[in-house]
Each structure stands twice: as structure tokens, then as C-alpha cells.
Amino acid sequence: MNTHSFESITLSEMDKVKLMNRTDQKYWFNSNSLSNLLEMVKEDYFLLHIKEQNQLPYATTYFDTENNKMFSAHHNGKLNRFKIRKRSYVNSGISFLEIKFKSNKGRTIKKRIPSTDKHFIFTDEESQFIDTNTPFKTSELRPSLGNKFTRLTLVNKNFKERCTIDINIEFEVENKIVPLDNLVIVEIKSDGKSTASPLALALREKRIKTSGFSKYCVGRSVTDPLLKKNAFKPKIRSIEKVTHTHIYI
Image (tube, rainbow, N blue to C red; front, side):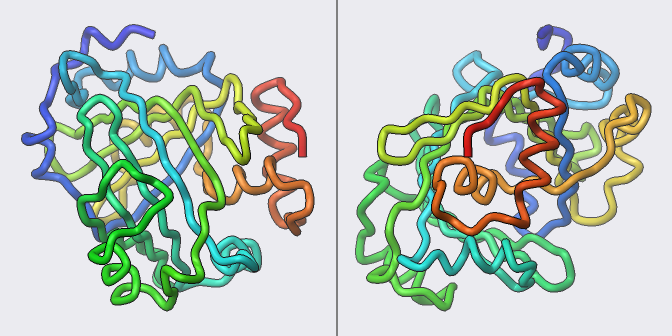
């Protein structure tokens, strides 16, 4: 995968396009298509570099209630739903507690505060943040899924769009690790419609269609054999077909 032909952008320069209230389009496909896709859009985007690296490791811990209210809300197609997670940007040493809210208008609204790297413990400030911005109390939350991946972040040179490309995706629960080999997840994030974006056009040219993908829901589905996941089984079978691998559920 050749990323050297992209102009670079720094984390502080990327702050121009935070997009905390945005629309998202997701795509996923076999990693064999990634190199050519990047070549198609190299003139249209900057590529984020941190400490001279552009393939950046992320580590995430998701939280849910004992009876999996957040997973069930997504499984049952409920809108106005939440996800709560702690995410570490490994190379920069920065961690955030993040709340993602998917509205019934199809917008993703993300709020976050700086966090410690102690993923399983909430500080008083973090507890207040969750209590204020969600219907959940920290006393009812527990770690439900670990997730690691490597991310490339593209920033449109018009600074109205940001795209993430995730590879090396794996999930972990109680030392059980499930990798999603050969899978790439692309997310195009903008403040409006992103159908005219260069990356979206390149994906369309390669006949890769937009398709929803929740790392949390897929991860829970492939790591917890007792969880009700009928709604996600077709997605998992499609992933297996696209990546030519078998995922144990």
C-alpha cells in the first residue's frame, strides 16, 4: 500500500474539519482493492501524519449495560441511540471518552472529553459527562468490547470532508480475539451530502456501494455466542463472502 504520494497534514491543521455534527457514509470491501483506490484519490486529499507515521493504531473500549441496552437499540433499529466508548490514539498518547448519538434525522453527533488511558475506570468528571449527556448512569455501565485497528485519515483539500480508512481490525472480549482479516472499512464524514466527494466517486467507479457498518455491533455479534444478533447475521455472512474468511459466532 503506497501512501507516499499523498501530501501530509498535521493533527492541528486537521482541526479545521472536526465534524462533530455530521453525516456519515460507510463502505467496506476486500483489502485487495485499497491500493488502487488510494492511487485514484491521491491528488484530492491530505493524509494525516503523527510523528512521521500515517498508519495509526487505535484502541477502543465500549461500554454497555448489563442487559445490553445500547446493542439492543441498534439491533432493533431504534433511532436516537447512543454509544459510549473510551478511545486511545496510541501514537499520540491521547485518550478521549466519547459519546456518539445517532439522531432520527440520520445525523451523527459526537461529544467527547479528554480521558485517562485507564479504560475500565470512570473519573468523577467522566461520570458527570455521561450522566449529563446520556440517559445512562456510569453505575450501570460495564466494559463490553475491546476493539483495535489501524487507521489512515484523509482530509479533503477543500476542508469540508474527512475520510477514515480502517484496516487490521480485531475485537477482544475476555482474552478472546476475533480478527476481521482482509477487511477495509471506509467512512466519509461531511457536514452535508458527500456523494460528490472524490473518494465516494472512486468507490462508485470500483462498484463498491455504501453499506452500514457498526464496529460495536459486529464485534459484539462475533464475540458473544449468547447474544441475540439475528439482525446482524446477514451482514456477517456478507463480510465472510467479501473477505474470503470465516468468522466464528
